[in-house]
Length: 164
Image (cartoon, rainbow, N blue to C red):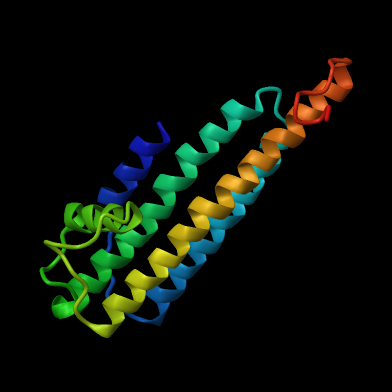
């Protein structure tokens, strides 16, 4: 459901406001808010009766939201500076490019051309590494904390990684 909602937002939110400092601030605030929501979701994983399921749900909501923010940024940049990429982006093109960068499959058909487009793409690449590495580690840690707490509270024996 979260993925469908994220894609719907991607296609329905007006992105024709122009490229200005307000737009850049809005995109930065979106990333910060996404990080805040993710932190809240990690906290709920540690308190969940089903932490693994809650962690999967967190990834299913955080990932698409993160990609949609960058996709919107690429649409705005492409519309305001048509020479930013090897072709002008519509929303589907921008989403395709965002997923291509996220999946690290490389470029071939669409490439960033201007300095601004390259910087934005590099920011996404670095954020992707953080999202994949840190978020996975934090979520796995949260699952372990929840499972340890549940084991300690229920009198169950500790798991194999704790016994030795």
